[in-house]
Length: 301
Image 1 (spheres, rainbow, N blue to C red):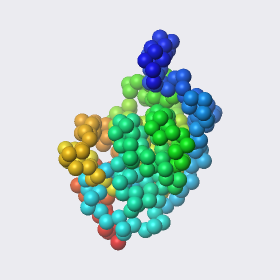
Image 2 (image 1 turned 90 degrees about the horizontal axis):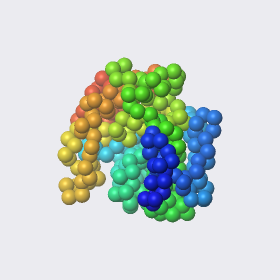
Image 3 (image 1 turned 30 degrees about the horizontal axis):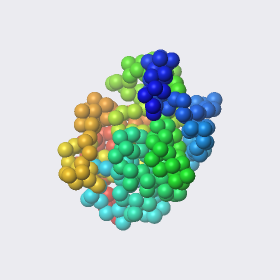
Image 4 (image 1 turned 45 degrees about the vertical axis):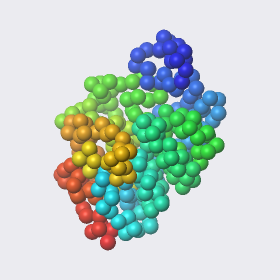
């Protein structure tokens, strides 16, 4: 967005609204009584979005969530039953010819910036429901044009940085949400939280997998298998990279203090509603006390 527009926004809005400066005044939204975005207009043109409410408890059974750790290269996806729903994040799209994804998650704006071919493939697939952010939609329209986006788009919002709402500081999370029956908190760190109703937004924990877990729980799945959740050996290329084209990872410094406690909370919260999560990465740094590990070949024999 233009520098002049940003300056005008900064002069006319409080600091806790700064996260909206790249959206205003080009993005117009409307929300319902639950806080869900129901109408999205960009530069005076309406954009079709799928309502999160329409996806609540839509699914049953199992889902495979494919992340991007190097262990993915050891898996034989031809063993998968056709009936299982396939979800992916970020560069897992390189497996789409094999997996034919149904659900997809991209909430990292730098990924959109640096992986144009992946995002173009996603946008051109009518069989995909893509979960991304308001800014993600803007970037996709700017890159490919609204008419070339034929996938279904569902908006996910970081609950602490919602569009045109004041931001919420990490230290204020518990105070703001402690009376919300749809929010669960980590027993050890009460700034780490989990949203049971994604219409209100999701909580970030440094990894798109955490956004996906909150969403898949809301969608109604009873068992979530995760491939590529290595959370270790961050110097190694992701399964679709090599040393020459490896993009940096910023997860390593977040694993111990943020990611692991958040995944522990997700495990506990999901299990309370009868949802189990199985980790298919044998070398994963995520302890079995959080997600039990199973061998891919044993599960899908």
